[in-house]
Length: 135
Image 1 (cartoon, rainbow, N blue to C red):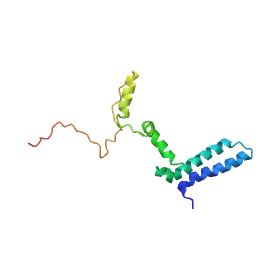
Image 2 (cartoon, rainbow, N blue to C red; image 1 turned 135 degrees about the vertical axis):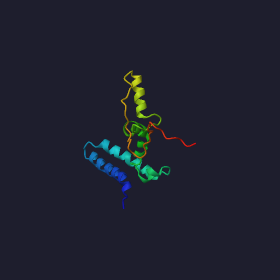
Image 3 (tube, one colour; image 1 turned 180 degrees about the horizontal axis):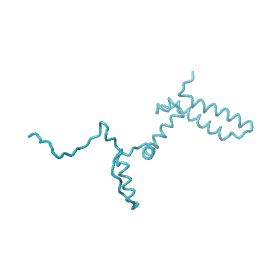
């Protein structure tokens, strides 16, 4: 029985056969056959190697994990980072630096993006008559 994790390798091998037959029949499919064949060879190599269990268990498609791991910092910076994440600087701090570097207005309107009514939000209240501190 074919496991679902090997479906990508099976589809690459099937595509190699189909495109090769189409190419022999005179249709323009040589490049597609070469690409599918190369992916099939990569998948077979992934099955036989011993170093990466992700590639051995998910041939061909396991390479996407390493691709996403490679581009993760850029994706996080531009798409998934919230405005309050501050590693090493928050988006607000970077925006101020960028606007100052461009000699644009670097003032931001007063307010917050945080949920001030949430349970984890902390603040100090002013008091006209502060309580006496115990000695």
